[in-house]
Length: 592
Image (cartoon, rainbow, N blue to C red):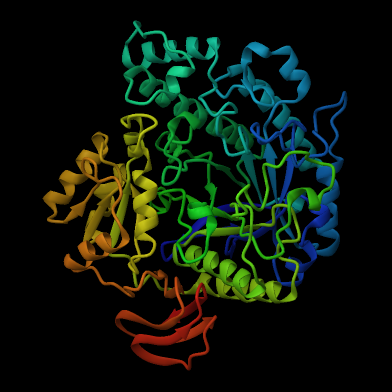
C-alpha cells in the first residue's frame, strides 16, 4: 500500500494507492472496551492501533500506562498485543486502513543499563530526549518492530505510522523539565558553544528552571529543550521513512505552540522540523481550555494554517468525553491505583476527564469538534480513550452522518467563506517570557477569547507572515514580548496597512468583547455577536451556543443554506440564518 498527503482545493487528504480519503479515524487505549464494531458499521475504515516498546508509564506524573505488554520487555520480542488487535479489526473489516501508533520508549532493561542516558521522574528513571544512545538504540528497536509489521500477513493494510515518545507519548521531556541532569547540562553547554559560540555558561540547577522572572541561561536552556525534542521527533520519523522505503505517510505528536507555553516541556521547536520531508502530519488533541466545558471553543494546539503552508496535514486527536465516560479504573479494573483521572475534584466540581451530563449534550460536543476541524481543513481521529465513550446508537448515527459529510467534502471545490483575521503564534517568543508569571498565559487567554467573538480566525506562525499577509484584514498577536520574527511580522502589518492588536504591558488578558469591538471597527465581518462559537470555512458553517434563545447568523453575502446537522431549516437562499437553539447546542450548515 502506498500513501501520501495530497492537496486538492487547498485541503489536505490522505491519498492511498491513488484514491483520496478524508483523514477520519478511530482509536482507543483499551481495545477490550473499544467501539471498533460500531465505527466499522458506521463506515469508518481508518484505525490507529497502539503499541509500545515498554510497559513503563506513558504519564510519569500519574504512573499510568495503557500497555499490558511491552514489545521488548522480555528476552524475545512479544508482538501479540498489537497483532491481536489488528487481526480483530481486519476480521471484521478486511479493507481497513491500519496506522500503527508506536511508542518509542525504552524498556526496563535498557533503563537499568543506561542510567546516565536517563532522567529522574516521579515514576522512575526514563530515557532523555537529548541522548544519542536513546536515538540509536530506539531506532534499532523500531527497525525490529517495523520489520515484523512489514512481514506480517496484514502488511498490505498498513497505511501509515504515527511515531510517539516522551511523556504521554506527545514528545514532552519525561521529567517535564527538559531532561535535566548533569549529562544533560553538559550537552547544553556543548550546544551553547556550537550555536552561540558561548563557552562561559553559568551554573544552573533544576530549581533555577522554576524561579519567577527572566534568566538568560534558563531561556537558552529552554531553547535547547525544544531543539532536542524536535530533533528526536525527526530522527525517528526519518528512520521510519527509511524502513518503509518512503511508501507510507509518517506523523507525530508535536508543536503545541498555540497551547503549551512552557518551553521546558520541549514542544516549541516546530520551526526546526515543519519542512522535514520525513514528517507528513503533525498531531495534537483539541485544547483542554476551561476544563473542556461546553459553550466555549476547544481550539487548536498548533498554528494549523502554517502546517498547510508547509504541505503538512494537521491530524487532530478528538478525545471528546461523553455522558458515558467512566472513571478509568472502571474500564480496566486493577490497572491503575491512583486518582489522577478522577471525574470530579475534591470540591465536587467536574475535572477535564468528565463528560457532559446527557446524551444530547454529548452529541453536541462531538458535533462541535467535527464542525471545528471540518471548517479548518484538518483530519480527525476519535480517541475513545478508556473505551465505551461512544457506545450508543445515537452517537454512532452521528458518527456515520459526519463521516458522510466529510467524505463528500473531498470533491467540494469551495474555500469560502475564508477568515478575515489571522492570529499569529510567535513560538520563539516563549523563550523571552519571564518564567512563572502571567505573561505566559497571554496566548491561551487571547485564543480562548477569540473563540467566542463570533468571528472565524486562522492560526499562523509569525515566520510565515510574509506568505499570508495579503489574505487578511486584521492581525492579532498573542505575546507581549515578541521574538525577532514577531517584530518583523508587526512591521509587515504596518507596511501593508493591516491593523493589528497585541497584549501590551500589563494587558495580558484581552476579553472577547474587546477583541470583537476592535475587529469589527476595522471592517471584519462578525457572524454573531452573542458570545457563541462560530466555525466557518470550506463551504461549511458551524455554530455552538453559549446560551439558549433566538440566534441570528449574519453571512457576508447570500448563500444557498442547507442544514446538515442539528437544525431543521428548509433549504433557502439568504444572508441571515435565523433559528432557535438550546444552550450548548451545535448545528452545521452547508453554504453553496
